[in-house]
Length: 163
Image (cartoon, rainbow, N blue to C red; front, side, top):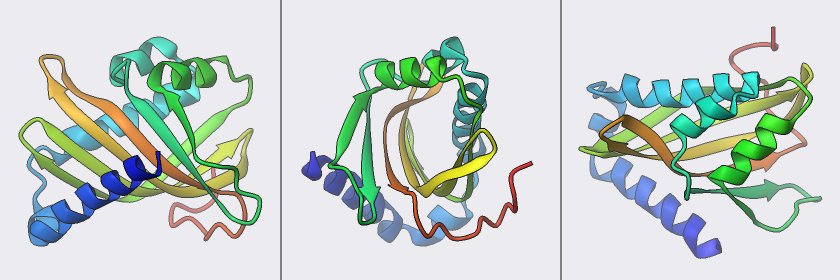
């Protein structure tokens, strides 16, 4: 599993290093990719399993890397398990992100961004998200993802307090 996270990080890093100007300034199609992340977060807040299933590739996987002194070992869950977990939650879940970097080539894309996550209006944790997307006949979908999860010492969000 550690190799998977390392591989994802290397792929995104190489893509950014290979064409850093394009990664920062080329918006051709980037809005479409970011819109998928926006729809995922809206579906999570609504606990909408149908909307999440339309966005996530079923056999994809999310990896969670805990940070801090009380960090748990690397965890992984299928996209299907992720949907089930979020859809069954009783609390209000809000994830926000900022400063996204999008890299893409034809039918593959990656989004790297800082985020914060709130449960019932209170900051739960923060970190960085990495989403890997693929484009098929139905458009862009999230194939896999990895994120860090930090519960202490989260920096203030540039988005301000949750409303």
